[in-house]
Length: 488
Ligand code: ADP
Ligand code: MG
Image (cartoon, rainbow, N blue to C red; front, side):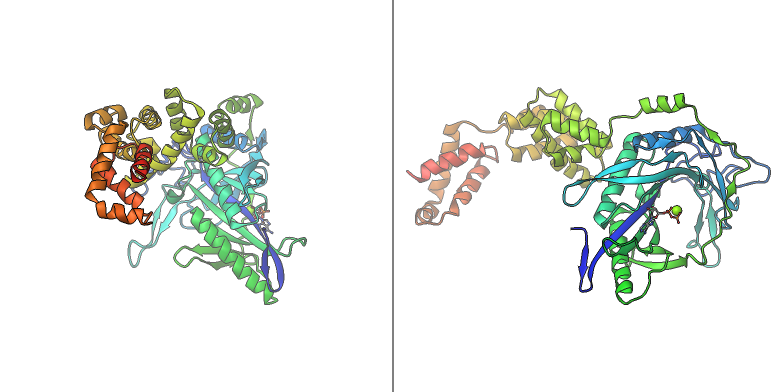
């Protein structure tokens, strides 16, 4: 159910996103300055970025290749001819006094991204276009009481603006879109998707209307830089606009800011006093003309993307749809998984357990040590081996968790750890029977209680016997033998 019901009837939310994605490239869009993140202020500034008189922009052809690759990966069509425009406005962190952007004729038209809605349905979110533009610098106001500072490291960095159609209907759909988009861009290696470093941020357009009527007036929330904020901002904006409309007022077409400390959006400027950007064709750059052969060559470099990969994992390894999507959302995780699977002589059952161990226990270790798959201290081959040890009853799942920790600490193979530490599971029924008999003898009173109906004591006996065997008794055998002993 996508509608919101209030006492006055049904409302529908309409959302469209304009996502700014920083292109992965060593140098900027129109200069040779570095794009490295985290360096000292103004370290990466060339004469072009500082807009010294007489300098001219030169198109970085790698950035163009990256935008083409993105367009193809998002099912768009590449325009063989596109242009750059000047968007004029004065701002301290924009030394040129204008931004070079593609306003009228973008490099990519159309495209779409497949998402899954809350009800588990497939949905296509269509793209309007993708254009290329340069980023601005950053004003810094919190370094001194009387001064503001400018850091131009970002000035001139290549951005793609990915503009959707107003196709999303809930905050969760918008979040799914942004997650999927981020995943695809990371597969393509055209944007690293680091929202906390500002490499990806979204302007969020939200409007409300009665189902079946024309779309309402939208408010645009600028620079939302996390998926959590996106959801909060849309929900806040929905409530704000419904309250206005139900009070008989109108929603103003305006730009708003999201305040992450309050979870609210606040008005910034209305359309009436919107800037007149006086766009005109950038005279310092020729039209961007592309050869079809260049586009074809880039198409060849596009890797298997998350949806296709998830479908294949589901087919080849009988993973559930959910697990296949989880594993495929990051290319590095999918690569790790596939290396682990091929390293063992796997059957479907093992492939499934392997995916659970990676997304469950291994991810938990990454969390614990604040790291990720790229810095995993456990190799895919060792992960595969661990699952084989579990599957062949050499160790129990419980012991395997300890072994995994030791693998992380030592880098040793799980088999070595199991042998060295003597962690092999006890599958000898005599040994298990003996430890159980000891437990029952020590707790004769509890055995009485059990026989008088206190069933819960069963797990107590199991726990005691596990302790006696340092957790190494085969749990299933332990259960069966205890049952037998208690019924004697
Ligand atoms: P403009 O050119 O005035 O900025 P666009 O047509 O480019 O408007 O739309 C900008 C963004 O706003 C797009 O992502 C689009 O999907 C979204 N959008 C347009 N109309 C609406 C609406 N009524 N409600 C929500 N989003 C909208
Ligand atoms: Mg726009």
